[in-house]
Image (cartoon, rainbow, N blue to C red; front, side, top):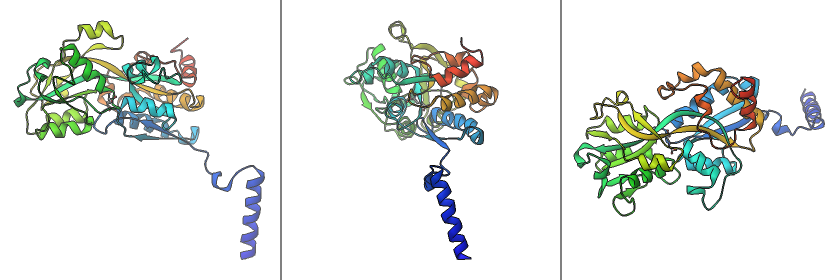
Length: 327
Ligand code: GLU
Protein backbone atom coordinates (compact mmCIF):
# COMPACT_ATOMS: atom_id res chain seq x y z
CA UNK A 1 0.00 0.00 0.00
CA UNK A 2 2.76 2.41 1.01
CA UNK A 3 4.53 1.63 -2.21
CA UNK A 4 1.44 2.48 -4.19
CA UNK A 5 1.07 5.84 -2.41
CA UNK A 6 4.76 6.53 -2.93
CA UNK A 7 4.51 5.66 -6.61
CA UNK A 8 1.41 7.77 -7.02
CA UNK A 9 3.19 10.76 -5.44
CA UNK A 10 6.18 10.33 -7.71
CA UNK A 11 3.92 10.19 -10.77
CA UNK A 12 2.01 13.23 -9.58
CA UNK A 13 5.19 15.20 -9.01
CA UNK A 14 6.49 14.11 -12.43
CA UNK A 15 3.31 15.32 -14.12
CA UNK A 16 3.53 18.65 -12.31
CA UNK A 17 7.15 19.17 -13.23
CA UNK A 18 6.58 18.23 -16.88
CA UNK A 19 3.76 20.74 -16.95
CA UNK A 20 6.28 23.35 -15.86
CA UNK A 21 4.80 23.81 -12.42
CA UNK A 22 6.72 24.05 -9.19
CA UNK A 23 5.07 21.90 -6.53
CA UNK A 24 4.66 24.97 -4.28
CA UNK A 25 3.00 27.11 -6.94
CA UNK A 26 0.43 24.62 -8.10
CA UNK A 27 -2.32 26.46 -6.23
CA UNK A 28 -0.82 29.95 -6.56
CA UNK A 29 -3.02 31.08 -9.42
CA UNK A 30 -4.77 33.73 -7.35
CA UNK A 31 -3.50 37.27 -7.83
CA UNK A 32 -3.16 39.07 -4.53
CA UNK A 33 -3.63 42.81 -4.57
CA UNK A 34 -3.61 45.27 -1.69
CA UNK A 35 -5.25 48.67 -1.40
CA UNK A 36 -3.50 51.29 0.74
CA UNK A 37 -6.05 53.35 2.69
CA UNK A 38 -5.72 55.58 5.78
CA UNK A 39 -6.49 55.44 9.50
CA UNK A 40 -9.26 53.05 10.48
CA UNK A 41 -11.54 55.90 11.67
CA UNK A 42 -11.30 57.69 8.31
CA UNK A 43 -13.34 56.97 5.18
CA UNK A 44 -10.49 55.52 3.09
CA UNK A 45 -10.33 52.38 5.21
CA UNK A 46 -14.02 51.44 4.78
CA UNK A 47 -13.72 52.51 1.12
CA UNK A 48 -10.89 50.03 0.58
CA UNK A 49 -13.14 47.49 2.29
CA UNK A 50 -16.07 48.32 0.00
CA UNK A 51 -13.98 47.90 -3.16
CA UNK A 52 -12.44 44.65 -1.88
CA UNK A 53 -15.83 43.26 -0.96
CA UNK A 54 -17.15 43.81 -4.47
CA UNK A 55 -14.17 42.30 -6.27
CA UNK A 56 -13.68 39.40 -3.85
CA UNK A 57 -17.24 38.26 -4.58
CA UNK A 58 -16.01 37.36 -8.08
CA UNK A 59 -12.86 35.66 -6.88
CA UNK A 60 -13.62 32.49 -8.86
CA UNK A 61 -14.17 34.44 -12.08
CA UNK A 62 -11.16 36.76 -11.90
CA UNK A 63 -8.79 34.94 -9.54
CA UNK A 64 -8.19 38.19 -7.67
CA UNK A 65 -7.93 38.31 -3.90
CA UNK A 66 -8.04 41.87 -2.65
CA UNK A 67 -6.98 43.00 0.84
CA UNK A 68 -6.87 46.36 2.56
CA UNK A 69 -4.09 47.98 4.52
CA UNK A 70 -4.42 50.84 7.02
CA UNK A 71 -1.68 53.41 6.22
CA UNK A 72 -0.55 56.96 7.00
CA UNK A 73 -2.66 58.34 4.11
CA UNK A 74 -2.39 59.78 0.59
CA UNK A 75 1.31 60.61 0.34
CA UNK A 76 2.30 57.27 1.81
CA UNK A 77 -0.08 55.52 -0.62
CA UNK A 78 1.33 57.23 -3.73
CA UNK A 79 4.86 56.28 -2.70
CA UNK A 80 3.93 52.69 -1.85
CA UNK A 81 2.12 52.25 -5.18
CA UNK A 82 5.13 53.71 -7.01
CA UNK A 83 7.58 51.39 -5.22
CA UNK A 84 5.38 48.36 -5.94
CA UNK A 85 4.69 47.68 -2.24
CA UNK A 86 0.98 48.21 -2.88
CA UNK A 87 -0.99 47.68 -6.10
CA UNK A 88 -3.64 50.32 -5.36
CA UNK A 89 -4.03 53.34 -3.14
CA UNK A 90 -6.67 55.86 -2.18
CA UNK A 91 -5.26 59.32 -2.66
CA UNK A 92 -6.61 62.87 -2.40
CA UNK A 93 -7.09 64.46 -5.84
CA UNK A 94 -4.70 67.31 -4.93
CA UNK A 95 -2.03 64.76 -3.99
CA UNK A 96 -2.57 62.89 -7.26
CA UNK A 97 -2.04 66.18 -9.12
CA UNK A 98 1.10 67.01 -7.14
CA UNK A 99 2.61 63.53 -7.55
CA UNK A 100 1.94 63.47 -11.28
CA UNK A 101 3.40 66.98 -11.71
CA UNK A 102 6.34 66.58 -9.32
CA UNK A 103 5.18 69.16 -6.77
CA UNK A 104 5.01 69.36 -2.96
CA UNK A 105 6.40 66.10 -1.45
CA UNK A 106 7.51 65.03 -4.96
CA UNK A 107 9.49 68.17 -5.80
CA UNK A 108 12.86 66.46 -5.28
CA UNK A 109 11.85 63.08 -6.76
CA UNK A 110 10.16 64.66 -9.78
CA UNK A 111 6.94 63.67 -11.58
CA UNK A 112 5.68 60.18 -10.73
CA UNK A 113 5.41 59.02 -14.32
CA UNK A 114 4.05 55.55 -13.53
CA UNK A 115 1.12 56.89 -11.53
CA UNK A 116 -2.24 55.97 -13.11
CA UNK A 117 -5.75 57.06 -12.19
CA UNK A 118 -8.60 54.55 -11.97
CA UNK A 119 -11.61 56.58 -10.73
CA UNK A 120 -12.51 59.16 -8.16
CA UNK A 121 -14.71 58.49 -5.16
CA UNK A 122 -16.29 60.60 -2.40
CA UNK A 123 -15.67 64.30 -1.68
CA UNK A 124 -13.42 65.14 1.25
CA UNK A 125 -13.43 68.41 3.13
CA UNK A 126 -10.83 70.16 5.22
CA UNK A 127 -12.30 69.78 8.71
CA UNK A 128 -11.08 72.00 11.53
CA UNK A 129 -12.21 70.63 14.89
CA UNK A 130 -11.64 72.69 18.05
CA UNK A 131 -12.43 72.38 21.75
CA UNK A 132 -15.05 74.94 22.83
CA UNK A 133 -13.09 75.81 25.96
CA UNK A 134 -9.94 76.69 23.98
CA UNK A 135 -11.31 80.11 23.03
CA UNK A 136 -11.18 79.51 19.28
CA UNK A 137 -14.05 81.17 17.41
CA UNK A 138 -12.42 81.56 14.00
CA UNK A 139 -9.41 80.07 12.23
CA UNK A 140 -7.45 83.24 13.19
CA UNK A 141 -7.74 82.31 16.87
CA UNK A 142 -5.55 79.24 16.29
CA UNK A 143 -2.51 81.47 16.91
CA UNK A 144 -0.58 80.25 19.93
CA UNK A 145 -2.67 77.05 20.16
CA UNK A 146 -1.62 73.43 20.01
CA UNK A 147 -2.95 72.12 16.70
CA UNK A 148 -2.56 68.75 15.00
CA UNK A 149 -1.87 69.40 11.31
CA UNK A 150 -1.35 65.73 10.43
CA UNK A 151 1.40 63.14 10.10
CA UNK A 152 3.97 63.22 7.32
CA UNK A 153 2.54 60.78 4.76
CA UNK A 154 -0.99 62.05 5.22
CA UNK A 155 -2.85 63.96 2.55
CA UNK A 156 -4.23 66.54 4.96
CA UNK A 157 -0.93 67.89 6.24
CA UNK A 158 -0.52 70.20 3.22
CA UNK A 159 -4.22 71.19 3.33
CA UNK A 160 -3.80 72.23 6.99
CA UNK A 161 -0.73 74.29 6.09
CA UNK A 162 -2.57 75.90 3.15
CA UNK A 163 -5.61 76.70 5.33
CA UNK A 164 -3.40 78.25 8.02
CA UNK A 165 -1.40 80.23 5.44
CA UNK A 166 -4.65 81.55 3.95
CA UNK A 167 -5.46 82.97 7.39
CA UNK A 168 -2.01 84.54 7.71
CA UNK A 169 -0.77 81.89 10.15
CA UNK A 170 2.72 80.41 9.80
CA UNK A 171 2.51 76.82 11.06
CA UNK A 172 6.14 76.83 12.17
CA UNK A 173 6.05 80.13 14.07
CA UNK A 174 2.51 80.96 15.12
CA UNK A 175 1.09 77.68 16.44
CA UNK A 176 2.41 74.67 18.31
CA UNK A 177 2.03 72.18 15.49
CA UNK A 178 1.59 68.49 16.23
CA UNK A 179 2.18 65.85 13.57
CA UNK A 180 0.27 62.82 14.78
CA UNK A 181 -2.00 60.54 12.77
CA UNK A 182 -5.60 61.64 12.36
CA UNK A 183 -6.85 58.55 14.20
CA UNK A 184 -5.10 59.72 17.38
CA UNK A 185 -6.27 63.35 17.26
CA UNK A 186 -9.82 62.91 18.67
CA UNK A 187 -8.44 61.20 21.80
CA UNK A 188 -5.81 63.92 22.28
CA UNK A 189 -8.48 66.62 21.91
CA UNK A 190 -10.77 64.94 24.42
CA UNK A 191 -7.86 64.50 26.86
CA UNK A 192 -6.98 68.21 26.65
CA UNK A 193 -3.59 67.54 25.08
CA UNK A 194 -4.37 69.53 21.91
CA UNK A 195 -6.72 72.47 21.29
CA UNK A 196 -7.64 71.68 17.69
CA UNK A 197 -6.96 69.42 14.76
CA UNK A 198 -7.33 69.40 10.99
CA UNK A 199 -8.50 66.36 9.07
CA UNK A 200 -9.24 66.19 5.34
CA UNK A 201 -11.87 63.49 5.27
CA UNK A 202 -15.21 62.39 3.83
CA UNK A 203 -18.33 62.66 5.99
CA UNK A 204 -19.48 61.05 8.12
CA UNK A 205 -16.19 59.75 9.50
CA UNK A 206 -15.54 57.77 12.66
CA UNK A 207 -12.80 60.20 13.70
CA UNK A 208 -15.06 63.29 13.70
CA UNK A 209 -17.82 61.29 15.42
CA UNK A 210 -15.36 60.26 18.11
CA UNK A 211 -14.10 63.85 18.53
CA UNK A 212 -17.61 65.27 18.89
CA UNK A 213 -19.06 62.56 21.13
CA UNK A 214 -16.84 62.99 24.20
CA UNK A 215 -17.17 64.99 27.42
CA UNK A 216 -15.19 67.99 26.18
CA UNK A 217 -17.49 70.11 24.00
CA UNK A 218 -16.25 70.37 20.44
CA UNK A 219 -17.04 72.60 17.46
CA UNK A 220 -16.21 72.44 13.75
CA UNK A 221 -14.86 75.83 12.63
CA UNK A 222 -15.47 77.17 9.08
CA UNK A 223 -12.46 77.76 6.86
CA UNK A 224 -13.55 80.70 4.74
CA UNK A 225 -10.23 82.46 4.08
CA UNK A 226 -9.96 80.49 0.87
CA UNK A 227 -10.31 82.93 -2.04
CA UNK A 228 -6.55 82.98 -2.71
CA UNK A 229 -6.37 79.19 -2.32
CA UNK A 230 -9.12 78.65 -4.88
CA UNK A 231 -7.47 81.11 -7.28
CA UNK A 232 -4.00 79.60 -6.87
CA UNK A 233 -4.64 75.85 -6.82
CA UNK A 234 -6.74 74.09 -9.49
CA UNK A 235 -7.53 71.16 -7.23
CA UNK A 236 -9.34 73.00 -4.42
CA UNK A 237 -13.08 73.68 -4.43
CA UNK A 238 -15.52 75.14 -1.89
CA UNK A 239 -17.21 72.51 0.28
CA UNK A 240 -19.68 72.21 3.14
CA UNK A 241 -19.71 69.75 6.02
CA UNK A 242 -23.24 68.46 6.80
CA UNK A 243 -23.77 69.00 10.52
CA UNK A 244 -26.47 66.27 10.58
CA UNK A 245 -23.71 63.66 10.76
CA UNK A 246 -22.36 65.03 14.04
CA UNK A 247 -25.17 65.62 16.53
CA UNK A 248 -22.58 65.88 19.33
CA UNK A 249 -20.90 68.94 17.78
CA UNK A 250 -21.74 72.41 19.13
CA UNK A 251 -22.58 73.56 15.54
CA UNK A 252 -26.16 74.18 14.49
CA UNK A 253 -25.54 74.77 10.77
CA UNK A 254 -23.53 73.16 7.99
CA UNK A 255 -19.92 74.33 7.98
CA UNK A 256 -18.29 76.08 4.99
CA UNK A 257 -14.80 75.03 4.08
CA UNK A 258 -12.84 73.78 1.06
CA UNK A 259 -12.15 70.32 -0.20
CA UNK A 260 -10.86 67.76 -2.66
CA UNK A 261 -11.90 64.31 -3.82
CA UNK A 262 -10.74 60.88 -2.80
CA UNK A 263 -9.37 59.06 -5.85
CA UNK A 264 -8.37 55.49 -6.60
CA UNK A 265 -4.91 55.13 -8.14
CA UNK A 266 -2.54 52.44 -9.30
CA UNK A 267 0.71 52.01 -11.20
CA UNK A 268 1.31 51.55 -14.93
CA UNK A 269 2.98 48.26 -13.87
CA UNK A 270 -0.23 46.72 -12.53
CA UNK A 271 -1.69 44.40 -15.22
CA UNK A 272 -4.61 45.66 -17.33
CA UNK A 273 -6.85 42.69 -16.52
CA UNK A 274 -6.65 43.35 -12.78
CA UNK A 275 -7.50 47.06 -13.13
CA UNK A 276 -10.22 46.23 -15.67
CA UNK A 277 -11.86 43.70 -13.33
CA UNK A 278 -11.93 46.06 -10.34
CA UNK A 279 -13.21 49.01 -12.38
CA UNK A 280 -15.87 46.91 -14.03
CA UNK A 281 -17.13 45.39 -10.79
CA UNK A 282 -17.35 48.74 -9.00
CA UNK A 283 -19.22 50.39 -11.90
CA UNK A 284 -21.47 47.43 -12.72
CA UNK A 285 -22.46 47.18 -9.06
CA UNK A 286 -22.71 50.92 -8.64
CA UNK A 287 -25.98 50.97 -6.69
CA UNK A 288 -24.76 48.32 -4.31
CA UNK A 289 -21.41 50.10 -3.93
CA UNK A 290 -23.13 53.41 -3.14
CA UNK A 291 -24.95 51.83 -0.24
CA UNK A 292 -21.73 50.70 1.42
CA UNK A 293 -20.98 54.13 2.99
CA UNK A 294 -23.11 57.26 3.54
CA UNK A 295 -20.25 59.40 2.11
CA UNK A 296 -21.06 57.87 -1.31
CA UNK A 297 -24.60 59.31 -1.35
CA UNK A 298 -23.54 62.02 -3.82
CA UNK A 299 -21.64 59.74 -6.22
CA UNK A 300 -22.49 59.55 -9.91
CA UNK A 301 -20.70 57.44 -12.51
CA UNK A 302 -19.79 60.57 -14.51
CA UNK A 303 -18.53 62.30 -11.35
CA UNK A 304 -16.25 59.33 -10.70
CA UNK A 305 -14.38 60.17 -13.90
CA UNK A 306 -13.67 63.75 -12.77
CA UNK A 307 -10.85 65.07 -10.61
CA UNK A 308 -8.21 62.77 -12.10
CA UNK A 309 -4.81 64.26 -13.07
CA UNK A 310 -2.70 61.20 -13.87
CA UNK A 311 -3.50 59.31 -17.11
CA UNK A 312 -6.27 56.75 -16.77
CA UNK A 313 -4.90 53.21 -16.53
CA UNK A 314 -5.54 51.28 -19.80
CA UNK A 315 -7.40 48.54 -17.90
CA UNK A 316 -9.87 51.11 -16.54
CA UNK A 317 -10.07 52.86 -19.91
CA UNK A 318 -11.05 49.58 -21.56
CA UNK A 319 -14.06 49.35 -19.29
CA UNK A 320 -15.03 53.05 -19.68
CA UNK A 321 -15.03 52.65 -23.47
CA UNK A 322 -17.00 49.41 -23.34
CA UNK A 323 -19.57 51.04 -21.05
CA UNK A 324 -19.78 54.16 -23.22
CA UNK A 325 -18.58 56.35 -20.35
CA UNK A 326 -15.62 57.57 -22.44
CA UNK A 327 -14.82 57.80 -26.11
N1 GLU B 1 -7.48 62.38 3.30
C1 GLU B 1 -6.69 61.66 4.25
C2 GLU B 1 -5.30 61.45 3.71
O1 GLU B 1 -5.12 61.44 2.54
C3 GLU B 1 -7.29 60.32 4.62
C4 GLU B 1 -8.73 60.38 4.92
C5 GLU B 1 -9.36 59.03 5.21
O2 GLU B 1 -8.65 58.12 5.62
O3 GLU B 1 -10.56 58.94 4.99
O4 GLU B 1 -4.36 61.26 4.43
